[in-house]
Image (cartoon, rainbow, N blue to C red):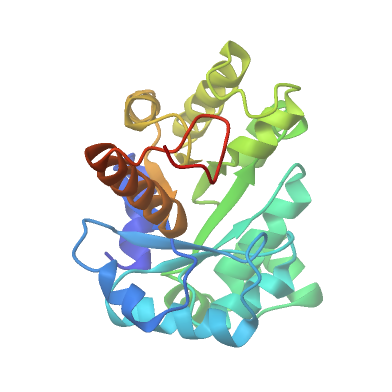
Length: 271
C-alpha cells in the first residue's frame, strides 16, 4: 500500500497493519518485507534516532513499499514538515488535546509547504486557494497520513471537536500515557481503560476517521478484541519487543530441556 491507499482505507474502516520499527540496521528493513505489513511506525518521541538516521530509515522503507509513519517529539508543525521532507509518509502528533494542535497537523500534512498567514487562510477557507495552487497541494500531499495520539482524559473529553477537523485521518491511542491519565498506570485490563479505549474507537469510526492503539501488552486475544471493537489502525508490538519475547521463550525452552532453569528470585543463579 502507499500513503494514499492507507488514508483511504482508514476513512473507509478497512484495517491496515503495522509495527514499530526502531532498529536502524540495514538487514532489518528487508526482514520487515513480506510479513503482511502495510506500514511501519517509527517513533522519535521516545527513541533517540537523529534526523539523518530517521531520513535513511524512511527512504529505505519507502524503497520496499512500506510507508513509514513517524511520531514527532512534540505536536509541532515544523517538526512534521521536517520528517515529511525526509521521506516519511505520515506524521503522528503526540499527546494531542486541543483543536489548534489538530489544525497544525493538518496544515503540515495537507498544505505543505504553505506556512504563516497563507496557511492559516487555507485552513480557515480552503476555497481561498487559487485553483492551480489547490491542485498542486492536493497532488503533493495526497500520500501524507495525519494521525493524532489520544493519550489523556482531556483529549477524550474534547474528542468530538478534535475529530471534526477536516484533514485528520486517524487517532492512535497511546496506552501507557492514557492509563496514567486515567489514574490506573499500566492496568490495561482495567474496566476504565477498556471503556476509554472503546469510547475513542466508537467516536472515531462515527466521524469517519481511523482508530487504533499501539498494542504492546496484553496478548493477541486482547488485541483481537480491540480490533473487533472497531480499531482499524493496527500497530502491533515493536521489533525490539518481538525479538526480546521470542529470544526469552527460546532460551527458557532450552534451559528447561537441559535442566538449567534459573532459580526463582535470583537472576543469575542456575540450578
